[in-house]
Length: 350
Image (cartoon, rainbow, N blue to C red; front, side):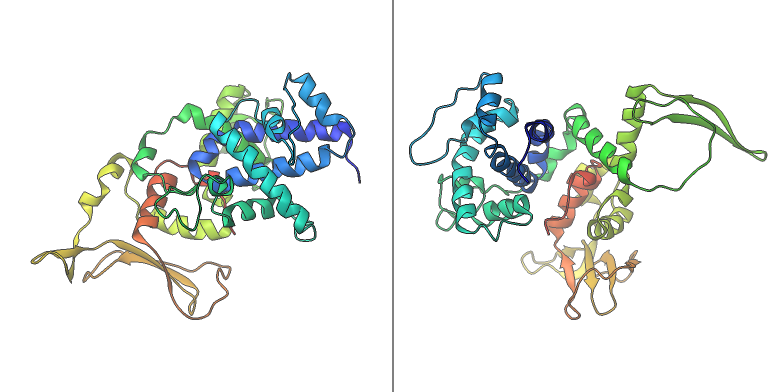
């Protein structure tokens, strides 16, 4: 069904909100950036079917629109949806990427008929990321060139700007709690914010639970909701939750996170490169498909704390061959996700 101008206006506002959070999200994962731009492309396809709609939007936002010979000019579209929320370099890069996306969509319309935004994000990833697809370097030959998904040093995430991440976390927490189904509780009528949230002060005693008062201050509600969401492991998809809940048990406190390596004991295994020294007894997380359970423990030591966890759901289809999480990946999860309580800003890549 053809799109209407009112529908497109609502979708444009939603896209602008997504892009406003893009600078925060792209510091965490490029996959989310690719998905947002996939949504932008899908919206553009719908918008151009409405005669004169895009031109009206450009004019209303004082965006110059110059037609280019041979391919679509995506710069006005990107300025419209980003409202200068991303850098000029990124805007120019995506302006070069989207014509390549358009070309691939035109070649394989059946492939993109369902879940087009996800498939566009996958296409960009398979081509080496936005910079490779834009032609800045060859993903096959420029081995030393930094890719879109180059890992950010974990140490950088010890000093995150909380104010910068707050709007993104607040938006995500509102979406989650608006659709989740928590345990029902019967309480007296309380003062609430415009969207139905309240902070309650209760007293638990041998006479039961007493409601002392309620608070509907929007700032306090937003702060509490965001902090609750940041530490809510149940808000994650099952696959991520199964891994992070286990690692979380043996994770060191944030106060000593920057020097966690100093607390690692030595194992019984000789260091092959340093004579007279022993290998570190690093933690290793293993998933055993034969028994469908996880084991987290230190390696090569006579005794240590072992975490044994068995998920209710089967996480892998394979029946043979244990899978383990590399030490660098585990440290990245501890540093970037758990220590910063940022795990609910991520989502599975597949």
